Image 1 (cartoon, rainbow, N blue to C red):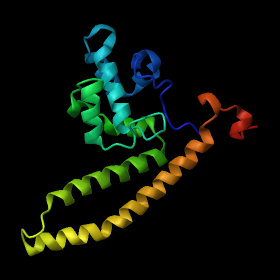
Image 2: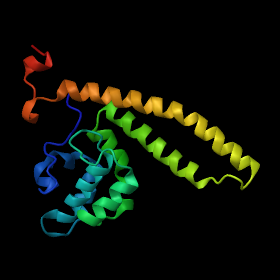
Image 3: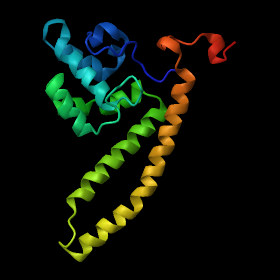
Image 4: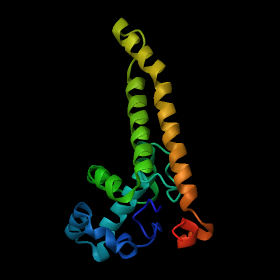
Amino acid sequence: MEHNLLNSVDIQENFWEQNPHTLIIREFKALNEKDKSKNKTNSSKTMWCLFMLRDQSSANKLRNMTVEDKITELESTYYKADWEEVKALFDAYDTHCTSYAHRRLGFWKDQLEERETYIKSLRYGATDAEDDRKEKMLSSVFKLWQDYEKAERMVKEEDNKTETKGQRKESATERGDL
C-alpha cells in the first residue's frame, strides 16, 4: 500500500513539476494559482516546507524534529515561508497525502509536542493548583507515549510492506495482487 501521494521528494526540484497531480487538491491548487513568482517557485518551496513539517515517512529527513525546530531549521537553510499559510495546509496534506497510520502518528506527535510545551510553561511553587496540574500531567504523559509508540510501530510495519530496494515501486506479485 502506497502511503504518500507524492511522486518525488527532491526538495531541490520544483514541487509542481514533480507532483502535478496534487493540483487536484483544492487547497494546493489555490496556493499554486495565487503564486506570481517565476515557475511558481515560492509555492513550490511552500509545499516542500509543508512536506517537511507534516510527512512522517522515512523520505522526510526532518521527521523526528519538533515542528518548531523544523521551522527554525528550514528558515535558516531552505526557505522563509509564511508559516501560518503552511500550517493552514496541514489538514489538507494529512488528509490527501498520508495513510491512516501516518496520520495517527502525526496526531500523537502533535499532542505530545503541545503537552510538552504546556507542561514546560507550568512552574512549581506558583500555586498548589498549578503544582498539582503539572504533577498530574507528568504522570499521564506515559500513556500518550505508549499510544505514540504504537502508532510508530504501525507506520514502520506499513513502510516495511511498501519499501523496496532502490525505492522502486513494488510489482503486482510483490504486493500480493497476483
